[in-house]
Amino acid sequence: MTAQASRSWDKVEFYSSYFLMIVLASVIGTRLSFTSVWEIPRLDMVFSIIALVLVLASFWIARKRRSWRLWIIGFATATQLVPMVVRYPVTLFPLLGALIPVAITVWALVSLSRKGRPGPQTRDS
Image 1: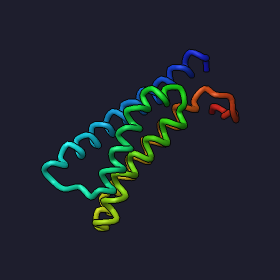
Image 2 (image 1 turned 90 degrees about the horizontal axis):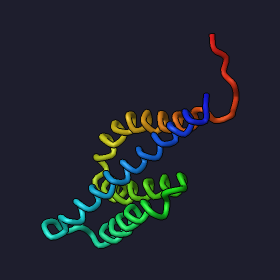
Image 3 (image 1 turned 45 degrees about the vertical axis):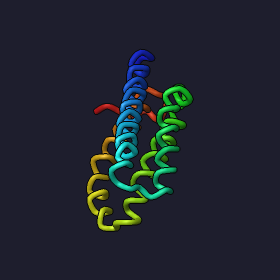
């Protein structure tokens, strides 16, 4: 595989992680915008504000480091899901069901980001 093809798969991972950060920022921002309508526990609000600041800042601070982007995405996701599951444990079941397509997507992104890198050679039949 050529270096050009390898770079194109890196771009797929790059843009998909940026799209995920945009979605996370919009979800967290929407949740925070409803604080005037529904009361959000103070701890949730603090974590949500920190997560929103990190996600927005990650467009600059994590633009060249994939690991930072993934850690920020993980932290922002956890700040939204963990408090919900702790307060309402029954929401764990739909989240586990949603984990299947998420796991498939993550596996595909990891596979695509590794495509074209030197490693164990596979034999074509």
